[in-house]
Image (cartoon, rainbow, N blue to C red; front, side, top):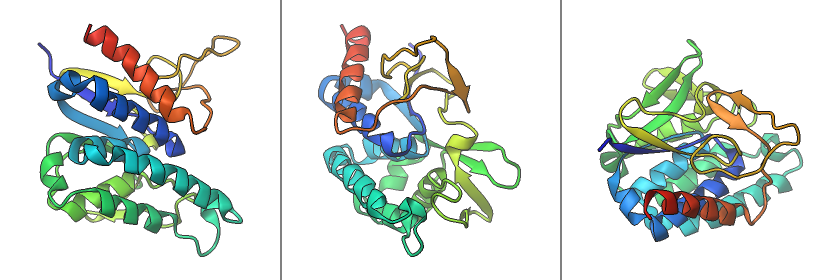
Length: 235
């Protein structure tokens, strides 16, 4: 049997969809999760992948954070780019509070984080983490959207990195079968079933894009779409 991987796409605040999918997998897809050898993700998807791998019991807490963080960001005069508002510092505090002390050890060789090199403009999947801080830096780099999150890219191992979604927003690992999760309707294994009026599909950085609505039911949608896959893979 081929190894099974689980990959979460770049998603921004639609990470709530990913958390709904992760919650459904914990409740109804435990056999599938037991068979997953590697996790992958880009931007917000990498954050969800890291939580599902190292601290799955905190998924519900992360849902609450996403809603609160979105509301906090909206309340700023100019959103995330409001002078004096440090978007990345707020995100870092949450990541630090969620990841366990041995997160880097659990993630080593099993978590593949998509990041973009600012100099070469190439994508790199990072899967080696020397410490918990090293892992946090990689996750923040993968989530750093230029201008929106700040002006200075994340420094890591002597280079500058930004959002992995800019170069590969839905990592497919080279070995085994990668089950993909995306909040945008398209060809991902777990995704909304919406169809455009003209039945057209736009693919950007390896991800199909069709608008999904950001609402408090987005996590329920991720939950239902994951159940659909679980019933297919685990009858």
